Image 1 (cartoon, one colour):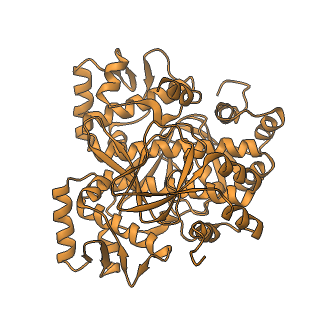
Image 2 (cartoon, chains in turn brown, cyan):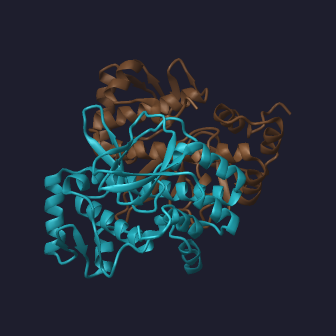
Length: 241
Length: 251
């Protein structure tokens, strides 16, 4: 088999912040999973469901969201290859939000109990899982301030900086160019803006030579300026861990 | 804190609500080394970018988490109530990514970071309880993203009042149909992404519509259902111990 073990990106990511022994890595790679492909906007987890498995992104991107009673949607976070989107479901009984596929996305569904067993028996893995959920929280805090206190141009630039930084960290970028299969509507839902407003803001960032947006990819043309416009400081991503 | 009670008893109660803890576990928590200190309103427990050596448990009083944008605007992203461990994330994260400030005069028990790290290693059940507390906190943060991102001003304020009422009630800190809101209108504005003027107008509107009455910082609500409705509030995201199961049984 030439194919890379689909759990390898997770091992790679966790190894950055936690010392995993050979035994830990072996146990991680032995986790059972079902592989499933989702189309654009397809639901991976629905709010209110009982959580029986955790979802790891193997290919593509997914996002967490909540729907409001008037039908509007708020996107709460984006998740890239090698990340769990709902690790909290391994410990909290009810899913308090939904997870959708951004574009076409391939996910590994890992049953809850072997994952918990693994965490119980391997302290280093438990620690890695924990750090993951803590970094998630840190990102949520940043999103609260992003939608709460930044203007639309800053908000969108901030979000683009975050995604570029994370994709770069996972080795999914090349010379500032990233796969970015996001729609204006999804971008609007992540920043608490309207699609029209988002569209206008993206146009102006493009016109100012900060980014280039093709059908499914984003190129950051001027990282220093995009950071400045986006009031972006990567501290909250805890990449130094 | 009631006279004679242990400063960490609120934290212990909170953990026991998450996971069953045996006698040894409970004793280990109460035996955590800690130093009590009193902090004035607005004073900082942790500053953004600091390298924390302690985790603070809020023994008495209220605190909030905040961040400031490059141009100086402040956003509050959580309110901490008595019994909350304020910065459990410091157990594993080396740099504080936000600041914690006191809302009121408060008593904090500073627990050394290493003592908590050791506690978790030696007592897996406590570790699990602490993880669950941090996960519930994350769930509340997600709801706040929604609140400031997609709700109008009236819903935002009503929602935050509902959240506060439920959290205080669960801790036994609210009585009847009311509670004390230890926040100024400016702080409410910073928690909802609004201006203080707007908050003032919304509070008056909620009052005029008979949803709340205010006496200084005391908030009363006559019709809980109506207030929840005004705030588009559903308590599931608070993962109140024991309620997740009920939620599933109802489906």
